[in-house]
Each structure stands twice: as C-alpha cells, then as structure tokens.
Length: 413
Image 1 (cartoon, helix red, strand yellow):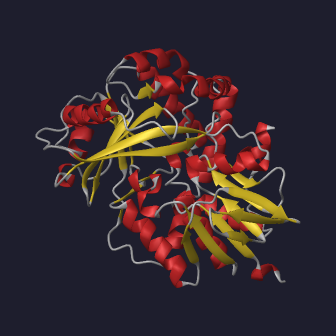
Image 2 (tube, rainbow, N blue to C red; image 1 turned 60 degrees about the vertical axis):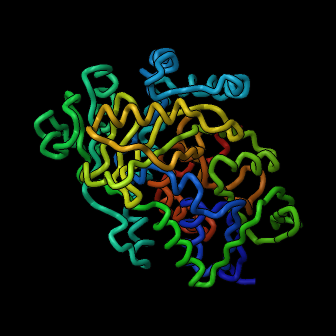
C-alpha cells in the first residue's frame, strides 16, 4: 500500500476533527470522521466565535493564584466550582499551581504564540474552498476593563509586547467611538484590529464538513468506545461496529481522555464548562466582539442574535447546567448594554483544558499510528485549522518548521 492510500480515522467532528480531516484529505488520504453526536451541537458551535491570533497569554499567569479565592466567593465573578467535583479536580489544580510560576507561564505563552501566529493563514487555506457568505467578519475584537485588577491587565499587555503581538491600547473616548452603545463603565482597553469573528460558528463548521464529504470523505455518527490494535494498526469499536485503520487521530475535545486512558497515557485533561445565551435581534448593538476583561465574558454579534458567552466552571462532563452561571451572564450583559430583552437559548459546553494550558498535538507516546489534537481550552476554535494542518504534516512525515516538542503528550510522563 502506498502512503497516499492510507486509511485514516478521525474521532471527533468539532472544529479540530473536521479541520484535521480536511488537511489529511488534501494530502490524498482516505478519511472517515466519527462522532457520538452531530457536530452542530459541540463546543465548536457554542463558543464565542472569535478568531483570536493575539491570545498568547495563558490562564496559568503568576498573578492568578491570589485571585482564585475572591473569584470563587463572588457570585458575579468569572470562576465557579461544582463542589461535588472538588475531589476529582484536586490533582488537576495542583498541577495547575505548579504551572503558575514565571518560567512556566512564559513557556506556555511563547508556545501558544508560535501556533496562534499561523492560525489565520491556516483557516484561509480551508475557507478558500467554501462559500462563507459573510459568515466571517474582519472588524477586530475589543477588550475593555475597569481600573480594578489593573496589574493583571498590565501583565498581559507586557507579555504580549515581549512576544511581538500587535495590540492597540485604547482610552475611554476611543472605546466609545468604536462601540457607542456600551455603557461607560470602562476605564481602558485594548483593540486587536486584525482579529476576526464568526457570525455563525455552526454554519461554518457545517460548510467545512460538507466540503469534506463532497470531496469523498465520510462522517459516521457513532460513539467510539474502545481502541485496540491489530499488529500496529488501530482498531476502534462502537457498540455495534468495528473499524481498522492505518492511522488514527483522536480529536474529540473534553471527551478525548476516555480514549487516551485506554492507550495507557496519564494525560491530565479536564473540563472547563462554558455557557452562552442569546439576546435575539440585538446583534446590531455592537459592531464587533467586546470582552469584559475583569469578568472574563464577552458579547459577540451573530446571526442568532447577540451571543453572551463565558465564565469558567469546573464541574466535569456529567453535572447539569448551572442556572446561577446563566444568571451571571445575563446580569453582566445588562451591565454593559441598555434595554436587552428576555434571553434565549441557554447552552452549556465543555472546554478541554490541561494544567499547563498548552494543547496536545502529535503522536501517542505508546502507539506510533495514533495521533492527538485536543486540549485547546479557550482557543479550540482559533486553533482548529493550524492544529489540523500540523497533524496532517506529521502523518505525512513533512517538516512543519515548528518546535512541536512542547505539545507532545510525553510532557506528562
């Protein structure tokens, strides 16, 4: 069998899986995507819709540890915890704390910057093959803040400046000129004029998947539950079917750990639960995404209305939606804009997060024909295309000209 005739399975039909499958298909491979659900319901649908090539500064900042107790105690804060999940989270939190040192923070920032810097060109390669019909807007993304916790804002700006991230600090008048409908609660902000946003992430993901299928790819709605091997070839099983491939990619976000555990890898993947609501017919109130940096949530104008998205809740995959988190988003949105109607579409999704806030991209440490692409935390949407391109080049034994060691699962050995 020639290299180009290899059969490759991709588990996961979110933005990571679909982009990976498209880049593999470009190289001539036969690809099948599997997912337990329709891809339109995943975290790749419900996110903020930001293409954020500037977002190099990780959550494992040196200043965040002292802020965590205050965040947890505040009903309006960005962080919440399902108390029944605390015992399971303790090992993850301990590893997270170890990664909040200056050296580790900068390690993450530099290696996020490396792939973020290539994220938009990678998407352009895929977007040139579909009709976006105005689904991506190039109006930049605006962050605003109050004078509370200014040291945190200054730290972020300083790190980005050191990395060479292009950013434009804006004063209250400049913020008002950009978004005149915002209430004047802010004292400053930063504007990334080259960033983009999705008007409808679901439609974009659907178009990418349709392009994959139109070019000969297959999508099967099956819950892959097990992996074993026939000699070196990975064999995956659902409840009723069995498939054998030459190579396999695991790209199913927060659910990836259920499969990597079967491959004898101790990858400390856990879940940051994120929420959104919509305010119908209110997308005209702002021209671009606006993020309230102090409260870690944002507003994005979309086809479905004004999407309000954010907060971080640790609670695993099985706990129900928290009404308090929904209420928090609604109150925060009303603090930013006047006259919002009753909200619609309460949604909960799962961000796959690792304690060093770097994704896992690359081969399994134990099985040479299994590759990973997951753990992209808040940047899964932004990094979908570049991660898929990197994995496809690894499988094709092509040089990426990147230092890929920081993303390897070997770092958890």
